[in-house]
Image 1 (tube, rainbow, N blue to C red):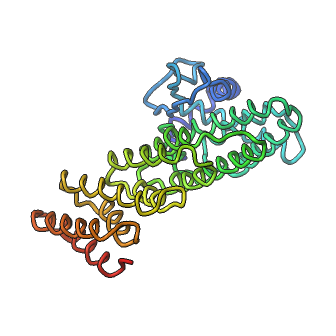
Image 2 (image 1 turned 135 degrees about the vertical axis):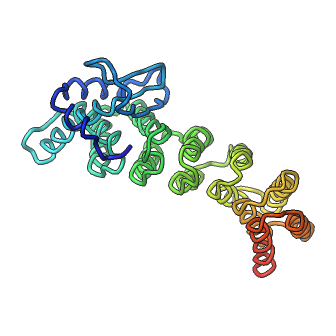
Image 3 (image 1 turned 180 degrees about the vertical axis):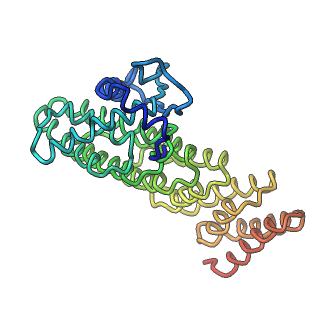
Length: 329
């Protein structure tokens, strides 16, 4: 969401009810229906809600008035500032609502994110028996921001860093991390919302470092399927290569199997985009595949290059084969 406000929005701020907006939006963020993820969207100023209404909700899908969000932010920001400088201390629940609204407005608000960390630690210290519920509630809120149709949230380094910190807290408290669901329902969705999402896929690598080994094959299969459907996304292919070369998998056998599937996909669909061929050339040169797969790589690359009439595709294929011949182990 752009930080720029239209002149009409600026004029409307004086006529609204900021406190009512704060209460309505904080209630939405605090209590998602059925304990699931919210699918949030900021409604454009052309979509006018009735006076006094700031949220339009249908199940887990919710539209938030842009005007209402700005009004709520104007309540939340001084609330947090007053608490931090000691002039107006607030309760944990109020601060939790304030920081939630501030992060919905601005995903790079580092002070809000760090305050939430301190609030979580304070709540856990005071209610140890509810640690599981407290942490899962924070995870739901955070994942809602990371997977919703918001302009900057899906690729926010601040939010992804906060999620990593949260998972570390899960581990330190002895709570399990659901690796496969985290990758399929959070990373995959964020990767679709914002293609080539560097921060999301880096987070996926961190999640795999927490894996005990039980769902490696399932993760591999899921990532492979996602990459096949998004074959122009280099970040997905890069993560697939990471999995293929990981010690968690069976080395050369996994490399050969994955390579064969991908090269056949490229051959059958005549794919010559750079993302898939960078993956193929890297895997072919890595030593994780044998001579038979390497020969297949050169054969398919040459065939597609000769049959293509698109100069850029020809250059991609030519460069991939030359690179592989130069750097192959």
